[in-house]
View: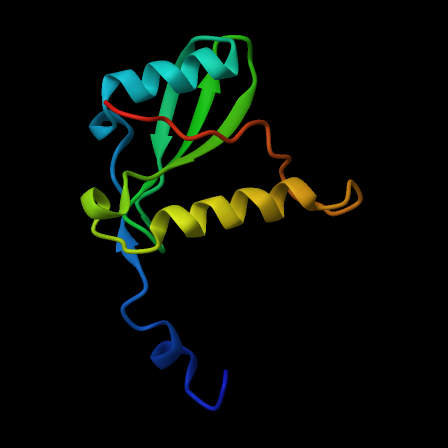
Length: 114
């Protein structure tokens, strides 16, 4: 129970099918690669989640593995408030103490235009 409602009623309508890595505009994929500082050798999209944005595990040519999330502007993504949710997630992740067992935020940015 959560707030007096069954769990499934609390989260009803919140989930979404995520977009595939290959559906992300090439210019955005290129920006992600540039910010990571190494070519992307493999990408595994994560199919389900709470937004229609991208969630993908990337393997970089230098051996690093990173998890990437991205979302289009609210008017394009069909997820009102989606951008704010991603911004909030980035702020919270960046503020986690070092002793919390969680992946570290490498970078967060917003890209303007195509």
